[in-house]
Image 1 (cartoon, rainbow, N blue to C red):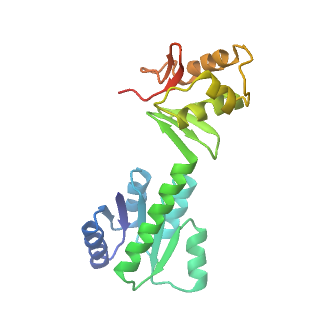
Image 2: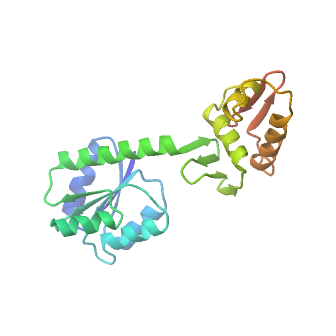
Length: 225
């Protein structure tokens, strides 16, 4: 797990970085708001520990810019401002948690662990990935290699089922039951037509195909070796 600590007080930043590193995390540091925003925007962090009162750009402004850019990395705000109004402002600005200084490191660590558990659970239930193909269940969007792919509702359901069973052979009967709600084979080519259309959308113009036909068995969506 990789964390970003944005804190202008060197002693506090060193204390946090040392403790988190000893707890098994990879930790980057930024000493002011603009640097923190730049690093956080580059992605790759599982959570951010963010001081509220920073030189250059304060913590709430950093959070606002990140959320406006669609970056949802969990953020724990650290601040000496501990009134109810201050905490509410921090959470409404996009913070996921708020810890008042001075603090015990054990509490900081426990709060970070809670944020990470929450983030893992959210990702597991809302996003499916196979190779560079990604399906977002909340926004109903599909992307491959960063490129958006437009799917019809039935194609989306078909892809979702194949992704949930990635690496496994999915039979025609399984597709009829779970995607079309048929409990018998009506001797139609509806599956072949939809699979063909889906393959054109997710595999055409990409170097390696993901959707394979398993002769005499069904279909398999598998990431390239």
